[in-house]
View (spheres, rainbow, N blue to C red):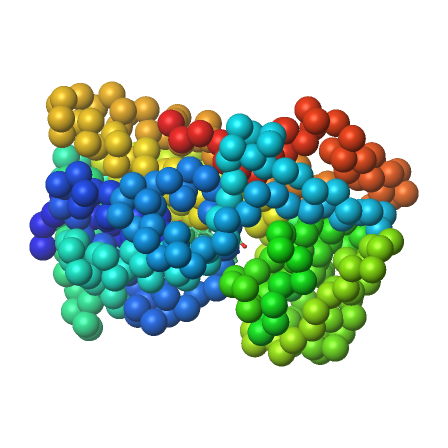
Length: 391
Ligand SMILES: Cc1cc2nc3c(=O)[nH]c(=O)nc-3n(C[C@H](O)[C@H](O)[C@H](O)COP(=O)(O)OP(=O)(O)OC[C@H]3O[C@@H](n4cnc5c(N)ncnc54)[C@H](O)[C@@H]3O)c2cc1C
């Protein structure tokens, strides 16, 4: 098999990249190790930045998102039984975010790719990227029990944190930056209307909690738990009782309960691999970086990377210049580190570390109080949450 761009992974990064290249008249082949149903069901992110919404619309993949997604103009911070709303459009010159699940983004992009795009092979596992530093990189992969080779001009590793693409960069050229947090998120999906019409980020002495939603009838809620927690060790009753404690307010706000349909624990990690390019191999999305989910940045960073790559390759096709491809890693990393900083700030402001001292508690409350009383501090949060510019 031969193609211009070999894409490993059909998560949001790989699927959107295939769509952007198709729209630019550049052919690609997507290899995905899992089956279609698995990819379409995998529960992950749910908040799309303004820039991501704009990119999906421009790519012709925004129709259902515009019909079914929920536009949010703010979030609520909850601490010390107080409530403070951050108004995004007022602070950012009109920006907002969209609640539309990653599962739905993937379903929309898969349907478009299968209808109009190039080959998208499910159950096709990339085994290795070879010749990344030559003009003819290859992906060795296994599909339907047989090994095959995909010959490419470029390979983009969109294969997530556990993928194979990153391994093709020689260890001597790689630098990694990492922080693992001593807590994770116990996440639930519940068949009940959200108890608030915007996301609620709660800082509590017992730990962080987040109220989010997937639709007007499905709530997504999270509790900070120790990193090694088994989701099944929490009964439904214990989860609801703990959520009620952490969301408690001084007014008459109440949490709606409903049947829990899914429970899982997500670890919290910050990770960056530099550089994001080696020869004709480019890394995009979780293959190159991970953020803790507190800032809702993971999916949005993946989108920024593939937009940058598609622009750079289109520029090369149009002008013959490699300039933007050469700048790919530095261009992406600038935005990646802003998202890492933002996610770190949100995480450390809202979560209670196991070894937190009374001094740390007071500092967290002072940071939140500053946000609630300073337009400058609030603007910084609103700009970070609605998204840093691409490129
Ligand atoms: C449990 C969990 C919960 C999350 N929750 C949130 C959240 O609430 N908010 C948020 O913003 N972000 C969240 N994230 C992060 C967000 O989902 C990711 O940043 C986003 O999925 C990145 O997209 P991606 O396409 O780069 O990688 P992925 O979505 O990981 O896609 C990679 C794809 O590559 C495939 N693949 C892997 N190896 C191979 C191989 N060898 N050959 C072929 N295919 C391969 C995988 O099957 C997968 O389909 C969460 C992540 C996890 C793991």
